[in-house]
Length: 415
Image 1 (spheres, rainbow, N blue to C red):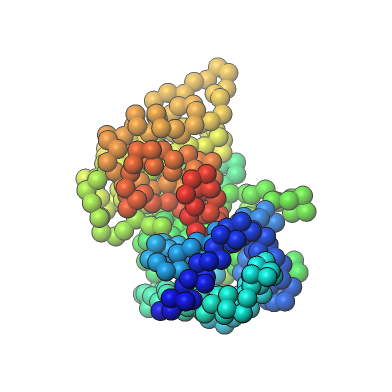
Image 2 (cartoon, rainbow, N blue to C red):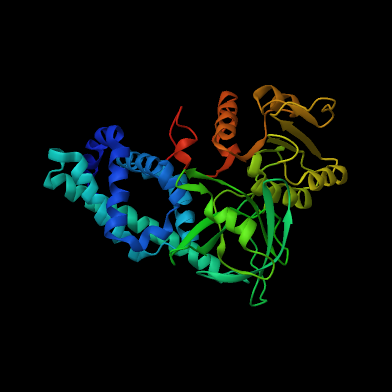
């Protein structure tokens, strides 16, 4: 454990880090990529260009400094980061690289406040946190490797087939090149793809598994993304998966990871409420199919919001599930107005996923909530559940991006 003097010294820097955190992290990433370009493939450059990773790291550093004497409150953030690190194959040898550049950046941002005592305290605190992360990540690596069909590192998968799900979303069915079995995963988890770039390096992306466990394949369903900047007019990896890769091609894939999932054993008999926005349907569909097959008596509600019918994925699948399972209530919410001469009704409506709609469709507010989607959708749902005072243990979500953005208008979630 850290001694009291170290704790007090680190905590004393929290206010200035709160004010100048993003300056610190922008400087840190710039310094690290210059000094250690070998670590660049571990980072999503679109998030770098948009500033989201810098903002997320700033929140995490500030939260660590403020809570260094009570790290239990950061437990969920540690689990999130450990899973992300394990999915990207972050190893113990990478921590000294981050530490050296981070401490140098902290020193520059603190200026005269970066006394010898302050920097010694931060070095000790970083080493302490790194040890926590390394040990948890080792557990994840070991668990993934020991599962039947499991592995460590990256494994070659063959694209068995591709299927267009909407104007923007295409599914890829992936099977191990070696023909060996697949490990069980928890519905809601993701896998990591490592793809070569034009300059001969690699880049990695996480994609939720969109089918239930127990199949002879993994399935990911990828939205064709626009680029974050004019210099990057389109999402490199998503466009590769849509246009360049076809059946028979080989992809490098890491084992399933992620702390957002439906538990194997139900934790309660409460109704299950699933809320998806756009491409956020991917982990939610895996959760839904698993819940329907393993919890036949549990009341399940799925509300799926998207722009319109053309960009919506999996509607035939969802309609079929609703017909087969009387315990499933299904509703589609489209934000685009209906076309002239047509109308929406029954299980479809026009508007946004809002408090009135959710309340109208639920048998009661006492439920377990799982939600995933774009930032505005996530913020809205999160706000609704907070308004209803839903207990934290009944709220589960996956946010495609740094989580710091999810609650930037209320309490921050370190990522």
